[in-house]
Image 1: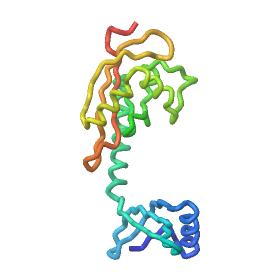
Image 2 (image 1 turned 180 degrees about the vertical axis):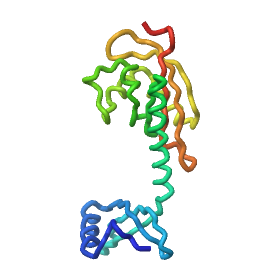
Image 3 (image 1 turned 45 degrees about the vertical axis):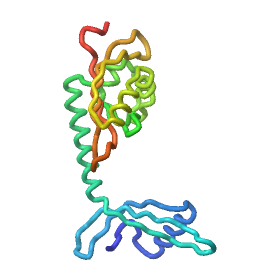
Image 4 (image 1 turned 60 degrees about the horizontal axis):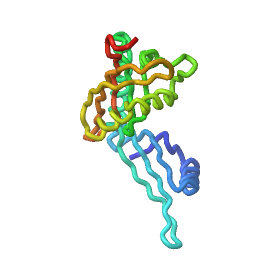
Length: 194
């Protein structure tokens, strides 16, 4: 197998080895071509190992084409879900395997009464803090740990104003039999919010 763009020549390989020694290892994602001319996405793990007085560079490669294709499908699905749910005024968020928010749609900011000055496109610490304080993060973690969809109503405490009930539905995202995160759907319980 030829690794094309990741390590284009001997000079680049020597620099890679020096970097691996300095950092005690590297993880490189690159494109490769099999003997049959089939392109593949590869993950190359370069480790610097010493045994006694001897030093070794150990290299492991793994075909990640299937994983990258799945990640692209999930990203497209998330984008579609966000747009659909914004039309229905449903809050939507994604979480990592630990229950930390990693993506939200625009509806959730309004629904949770988060002022414009506290909204950040990639910093969800305000939402995370509110979720933790209202028990939402615990529900996310329970769902992901149990590998099951969970729907519950929580008493949500916004930054300002009175607490109000929210319906939370968590759906675990599975990849190759493992939970990799979750999708959350949030809706204010009708007639309960003043």
